[in-house]
Image (cartoon, rainbow, N blue to C red; front, side, top):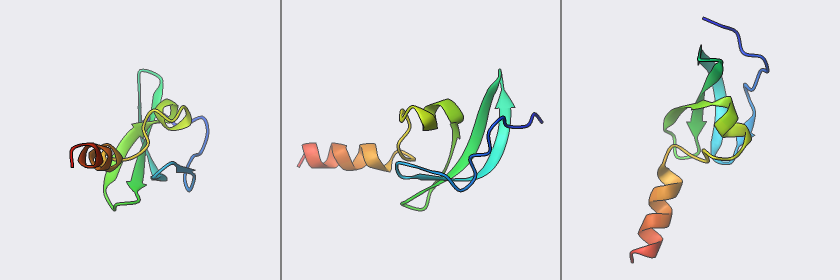
Length: 69
């Protein structure tokens, strides 16, 4: 298992808090995050840093519910 270049543990990105390093794959570092809703999600460092992934999917579901009610 490769080692991450930058330790993100404890950092918060939108609704996701990084709780541990998962693995590297094709030079991407994957991190296990805990969402504010309680679910876990594994996300690449790039998607965390650029804001592409904001939650485990719960945020998208909330938006969908608001627009369809």
